[in-house]
View 1 (cartoon, rainbow, N blue to C red):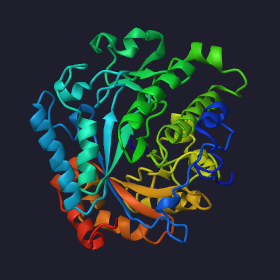
View 2 (view 1 turned 180 degrees about the horizontal axis):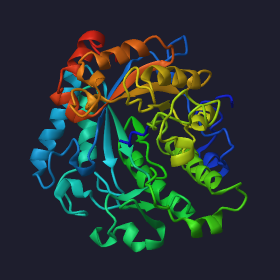
View 3 (view 1 turned 60 degrees about the vertical axis):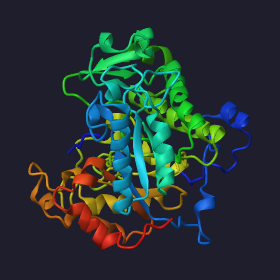
View 4 (view 1 turned 180 degrees about the vertical axis):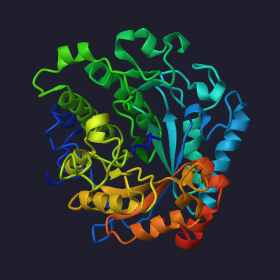
Length: 421
């Protein structure tokens, strides 16, 4: 997930959707016709009746799975099933599976090459379909399967020659910006936005996934002394915007709104969730922001106006990565939970809290994270806010290893009964 740095009325995504053709023909950033309700999941009170209990399963750089590139198909499959079984054992009910970590694919995509994290060689067929298997096996266990995509990261290195020969970034070098030692698709190019949507929608079209999930990477996190070079794109497409920052935010707004409409048009019922860095803006920057001193502000640094996406109802759920302990001065968990709770009021957007399980028991983290009860205290605090509907834990490796027993404490304190279905 992301790096850790130091009102409009809501309309649901299916309301006024009209026909799919009408949606796709009529989308604009200011439009309100791309939202969707989750009415089938709601009780008579209108509130979501189920407790979301999720885990992120990261594949980039073999973070969680597979344990190493180049394993046999049988070994990869067996390791994947262990992660699903562990989720069930911990009382979880959703797995957020990273299937497009860097402009590649964990399914047989006609648009992008097989991921290098499977075989060690980008583009090499692993001999099986990880996404198809994950969907079927998750559902067999009563788990939801959310397909996690990174829209614009093209490579975790800066050498186009290392990409598969048929990689779109090699075929269209003008689409690519090198920044911070990585390759990114340029979000300011309309043809790039159309392509990445098509690459992601392919998975929605072909698999019975429960949700599409984006993480916190839109424009890249700032790197000191470097400039994201989108001068030509801004010169060609930036007209009508107050400045480059406003144009960049508009580009990401378009991605979110258009993707929302395309998901609905392709497979109605598939939800759309985003997991942003938890500081939209500091209150010292904008009075609508949180009482934090975050070194990163998504609105200003990633050009991701997550507040607008929620207020406009372009997404079904938001999972802010509140990856700090209670009492952390710069970005206190106890400050950010109520800020997000207030943000979703009056909308149909569900709020799940992203939890930093990976910090629990890590000797490099502050003392609060050495206490196995810290994470359980998070869930206890969050339970006092009416719009918090669940939690998602980063990440699967730690759910299984449970370094200091923090996950076991969460299960004992909060998941003692069977997960609600």
